[in-house]
Image (cartoon, rainbow, N blue to C red; front, side):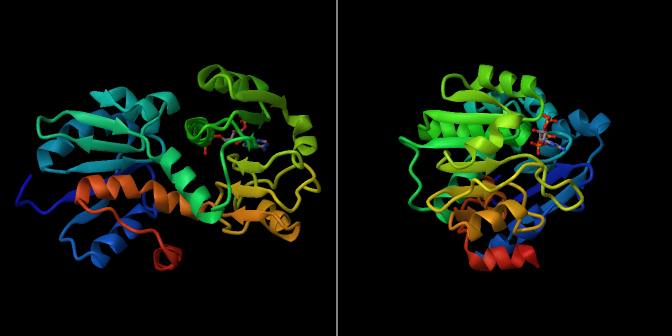
Length: 276
Ligand code: ATR
């Protein structure tokens, strides 16, 4: 690849809404790197063929978004432990021999955002309440377990899905019925919403948030709106509220570093650029 202008992108369907081109483009401009990061709209039926072609075009790597994250893991030649545990890849690196390496940086993005927004938060001796058991929840559970959290309460509307994740992530994860979530709100040191509830166009969180209190950290993976009702209530109760935009920014750091050769900074300027 030496001597070539580095090229990377994001593959999705739809992909036009993706903030990744704006984000990587801002870093390329900031560091004066002569690279390109472009959106690739690829339908599921074409995805496998595209993955074999991109390395031949000299593309260094690609982020993968809806609906390809699970397929990306299955099609890759190698996968990181994180991608395997999470069961999905959001980052593919194309090697010189044409092979494809799958990784998942969502867990890193979650933890880096949490540590930036709540620097006093500690993994040891804390109780965490995670709401939701979809794809995003898997990345959060992986991050929390790797950080050393010993007690993770997992509540999900569909109990069996949560039980499936408890089987995968093991010991620290304790499944709680959805109806019991409100009672656990005040006991938890950290509350994480990974459901789509509260997102623009989706229903709000369906239970009382009265239990939220000072001394807690509350974070929402939803970032549209940036200040969700969960975060608003948490902030008014005196808790530390960490919004979800930072996770999106931080998850892009490992990819940019790998493909463009420089570890980029996440700061207020970048947030403002992406918020546009
Ligand atoms: P993502 O990849 O963003 O995590 P997902 O895999 O579709 O998206 O997961 C969505 C999560 O939001 C799930 O935990 C889902 O709960 P179910 O497993 O019961 O479907 C949760 N969710 C979505 N709509 C919900 C609602 N109206 N009430 C409660 N939970 C909801």
